[in-house]
Length: 343
Image (cartoon, rainbow, N blue to C red):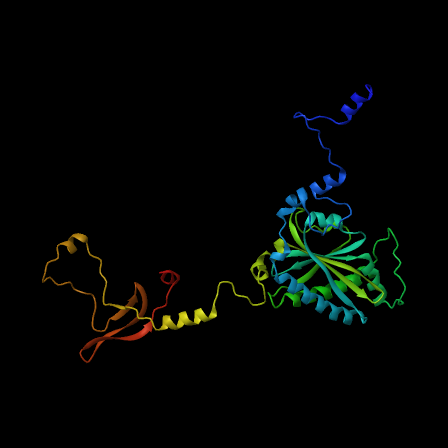
């Protein structure tokens, strides 16, 4: 028993305060860091990883995106049915935020990446078509038999026919995107190029945030996945529109109050000064004026008189008399400049 005591003391290290140190196991370390090899990347993260990824902007802050992409799914279902003459079902899997560099590293190869340009937004987007959808489109458009799985030959580059058919499908989807964004803002999406290497499809910096939309296209027993990536820089020009909770929302505006304010403004009384003449005189001359002295005006009975409101010229006319009152007949309106509008 005397020999076993030192071994027991070494097995339980003592802290400086006399208490035994507790060693974390692997599960506790993973929970602290917010890492779990069995969890999907799209799930909510916690721990240190949540702090690291806190700089990412959540797509939920742009509520109108869901409406736009739901409309895109309905349009794609109809257009791809007409394009393939087959029963096509398009479903929206997820809408997430991701860093552009992380997305490029996660693209399953082989795949075809279509880089498109949003002309009105003056930026680019990325459309990824996986290999299963590529071979399914080729089979459908070239008369492949139903029920037969597409044969994928590893290491073989995509042929010109395959790239051309994918390009035609991508152009159809981009037209649907134009129609999906049309109620919100007119945006024209144009295909720029097709790439098979993700390194050649870099449209943003690796650390930039982007919106990732995952779509699934099913054609009975065939189909595949497509992914649409839009950097936040591309959506920035229409960010205010995407912040709307519903289509046509007006921020900080009340049409009833605007109508009431316009009605009251039209019935407001304002003072108008009729300026016969203006002169520049030395200050000593003005200070030496006495009662009875006369100041000559450079105006004749036919001279035009300018009418001003708070110093802003509005109208020009001629002076006359109506009964016992001095009147001004309006001849023309003054063309206001930007400076006078600012006053």
